[in-house]
Amino acid sequence: MTYVPPFRRDDQPDFGNYQRGYSSHNQQQGYNQGFQQQQHQQDFGQGNFQRAQHGDRRAGPHPGAFNVRPNFAHGQNFQQQHQSQGQGYTPYTRDEKPEDEIFKEHSAGINFDQYEAIQVSMTPNDTPPVESFSEMTLAPMLMENVSRCRYTKPTPVQKYGIPVVLKGKDLMACAQTGSGKTAAYLIPAVNHVLVNGANPPVGRQAVPSALVLAPTRELSIQIYEEGRKFTFRTGLRCVVVYGGADPRYQINELARGCHVLVATPGRLLDMFSRNNLKFSGIRYLVLDEADRMLDMGFEPQIRQIVQGPDSDMPRTGARQTLMYSATFPREIQQLAREFLHNHTFLQVGRVGSTTENITQSVRWVEDAEKRDTLLALIGEHGDKLVLVFVEKKRDADYLERYLRQCRISCASIHGDRVQREREEALAYFKAGVCRVLVATDVASRGLDIPNVGVVIQYDLPSNIDDYVHRIGRTGRAGKTGVAYSFFNEKNRNIVDDIVPLLRETNQEVNQHIASMVTPKRQPQQSRGRGRGYGRGGFGYGGGRGGYGNNNNSYGHNQGGYGGYNSYGNNSSNSTSNTHNNYQQQYQPTHNHGIFQPRH
Ligand SMILES: Nc1ncnc2c1ncn2[C@@H]1O[C@H](COP(=O)(O)OP(=O)(O)OP(=O)(O)O)[C@@H](O)[C@H]1O
Image (spheres, protein in one colour):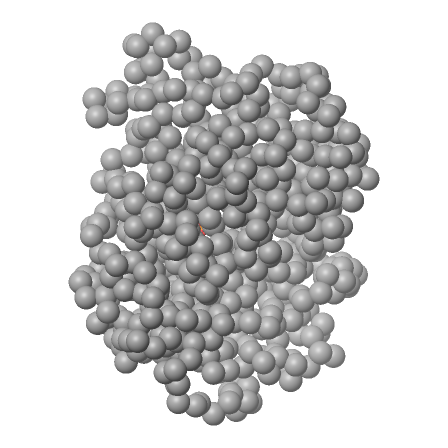
C-alpha cells in the first residue's frame, strides 16, 4: 500500500516515477518501537533506503533558490532583484498548495488583547520591543506572508523575542501555551535566510540554513506547516523529517532543496549519518520544547547533532541558537550553557492567558463514575471539539470504542498507533470530522488544534507541567476554553501543586480537594530540588542555582543553591520591561506565589 502522509495528500501528484511505497510492515515495525533511533535504522535497513537512493528522481533543487542575497534596503523584492541581476531567477514553481489551503482560516480569539497585560521579563534588557510586524523591517515577501496569516499584531513573545533574534543574538525563551512561540522563531528564521542567502546544495545533499528540532512527530509536522506559511512564494523550501514515515519520501524532499528543516532528533541523525544532509550550513538552530526532548531521552541525539565529533554543525557562537522550554530544570540550564552564546533570557508570564482564557474545573470523580461524567460533559458542550487525555494507551483505545458505541464521533491517538493512524486521527479531529479525540501525552505539548473548546483530563498526569501543557491545548491565541480534570484519591501526589495553581489563576477550588493539601512548610533556603518548579509555565530555578545573574551565568544566587530564586512574577501587574537590576527584581520576597517552590 502506498502511504502518503495526510498533510501531503493534496499536493500536486508530481513525484514522477519516484516510488513512495511504504509497507505497512515497515510502519508497524517502525512505530511499535517508538521514537528510538535504532528503529529508524531498522527501517532503513529493510533495503528501502538503498532502493530509494537509486530510484528515479524528480528534477533537482530549484535553481533560483540558492545563493541569493536580496538587498531589501533598496526596496526591491527578491524576484525583481534576481531578474535584474540576470541570475536566472525564475518564479518558484514547486508544488505549493493553494494559498487558501496553506493559510487556512485563522482568527485570533476575542481575548487576544489580554496578552498585553502579561508580565514580561528580559535579561539583559537591551532590546526594545516592537509593537507591530511592520516595525520589524522584515523581508517584503515574508511580510506578505505574515499578512496572509492574518496576524495583525505580535504576541508578547514575538514583540520582545523577534527583535532580539533579528539582532543576531541567542535566546532562551519561556512563554505560556498558545502564545505564538512558533512564529516567534520561524519569522526571524525565514527572514535570516532571505536576507543572508541560502546555501547551495552539495549534489543530493541538502544544506539547510535553519534547523528546528522538536520532540514529537506531530509537533514537527505542525511546525513544518507553519514554516510553509512563512516560506510561501519566497523561493525557499521548508522540509520536515520525522521518524515513522517513509524515509525515501523524506530523502527525496531533502534532495529537492531544503532551506528550513524541521526534524525530530532520531530521524535527523539517521539522515545525517547517511549523508542526506549536511549541518555545515546551519546558521540558525532552534530547540523547541527543549525540556520535553530531554524528558523523552533525546539528549544524546541532540548532543550528537549539535556538538558530536561527527557533526559538522557550526559551533556555539558561529551560529545563532534559540531554545524554547516550558521549564528550566538543571539539564536545560546545562544545555543552555553549552549551546547558547551570550544570550538573552526572555520570560513571558502566563498571568493573563491562563486566568482569563482557560476556565479550569478540577472535580472529584471516582474511577467508576468517570465514564458517565465524561459523557455528560461531552453532551453539555454540544458542538465543541473535545480533547480527552488518558494515562494509558489501552485506555485510549477502550474509551474511543466506548464513545463510538455511544454514537459520539471519536478518534484516538497514542504511541502504539502507526504514524498514518496518528496523523489521520489528528486530521479528522482538526477538520471536525470527529468531535472527540482521546489522547495520551503524545498530544499534550505544542499541538495547535484550532477551536478545541474543551479539554478533559480523564486521568490526571503525575506532574503539574503536564497538567499545564494539556490544558493549554485550549484557550489558544486569545480564544477561550474550558478544562475539566477528574481528580480522586489516586491523584493525591499532584494536589500540592494543583491547588495553588488554581488559586493563583482565580479558579474555583473544590473544598474536599483543597483540604488534602499538605500544610505549608517554610521554604528552606539551603536546598534546591532536582527539577525547577516551573509549573509547566516558565518558572525555573530548582536544582543548584536559579537562573544566574546579569552576566548570563546560571550560578548560585545569594550564595546558596538558589532553590527559591525564580523568574516568578514580581509584585507588578503590568508588563515590565525595565529590568535594570535583575538581581533586585528576582529576590524571593518579590515572588508573589505564581512560582512557589515545591516542598
Ligand atoms: N501574532 C499573532 N496573531 C494572531 N494569532 C497568532 C499570532 N501568532 C501566533 N498566532 C496563532 O496562535 C496559535 C498558537 O501559536 P503557537 O502554536 O505558536 O503557540 P505556542 O506558544 O507554540 O504554544 P505551545 O506552548 O502550546 O506550543 C497558532 O494558531 C498561531 O497561528
